[in-house]
Length: 461
Image 1 (spheres, rainbow, N blue to C red):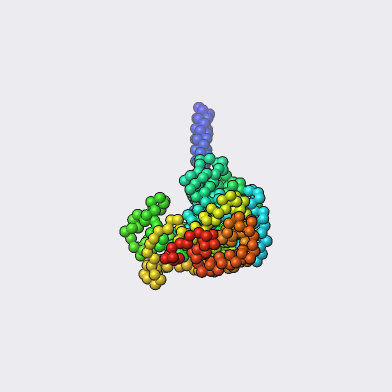
Image 2 (image 1 turned 30 degrees about the horizontal axis):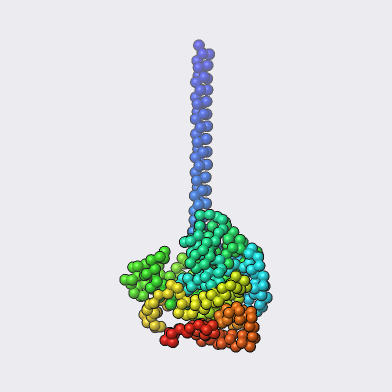
């Protein structure tokens, strides 16, 4: 009896012990899982919080200055402050420098640049709004017969294929690639637009982004642009957008506003050139260092052209890009037509195909001061650009070939059959003297030399 009770007690004790063991074991495992889950979640949120604090936006992450390890964390989080040293780095190295000292680079382009399409230098036209962009397309396409890549391509060419093709438009031939926006630049990259050698020039406002289409080793580009007084450009934009129903930014509501109202709008472009050259399109505030960098970039990498000096600008462009050799090769049969096309498009009264008559505020008026306030850095940049233009014009006046100047003053038959050096020098000097006065007068002299009827005497530039 006693042995049975002892056995029953031991059995109950063993059962309770085993039951408590399993309970304690299960509780321990569950606690371990909870602890692992807690610390794992804590680590994930901690890493996420660190990332959000360290890089506030993805753009800041991409543009963070990693070249200076001595800067503190706050400086590293800011957008990259560009300076002259960055002109020797990507993407600026994808464009060749304008060489003021030696002509060897130009002579090489003139002699060899167009013999092999895959190795030719493809130009990049940095288009500033309301600065004769349509006129430039007419000159390059209709007069010079160059193949262009621009937003115009989207209106005429087949953009649904990745095979490069050309199409004919009212302003010449275009390739089916549009480098004017982010999507188009990505597509052009996949299509190997520049290495293909098909386009002669790319047209876009997105300089820093479109620079990725070029290659500093095998396919470097040459930049040129045509500029206009920023105040005039702002006024022109104000009146143009009121009526340009075909434009993406058509604003009929501007008809009910004044220039003062327009200048006060938050969406009105301010210091447009400085922002796009430095990549600070969305930055609320620019600094003096930004415009100083833009000045150096313009002087070192750009052939500068001016809307009120179109004839001289086009002469410089033909020589700089080496396009006069292409012009003479493809235009022997219609040389006179091409020359007349150039003269017609470089006269000051026809320098803007989208030109519209409008009121221009006088210096010192409230309208002028309001527009100057939002374009102060661009005004500094434009004044510097005019000095660069004079410097480049002086250089090219010594280096450019007589053939380029002759495009404006004599026919190909005279050039081939009647090569009188004295007459050449005399005619060239007449044209060069006229360009010192104004491009309109230069065109008049060119017209007289070609025995064309003079314009009405009452018209002035």
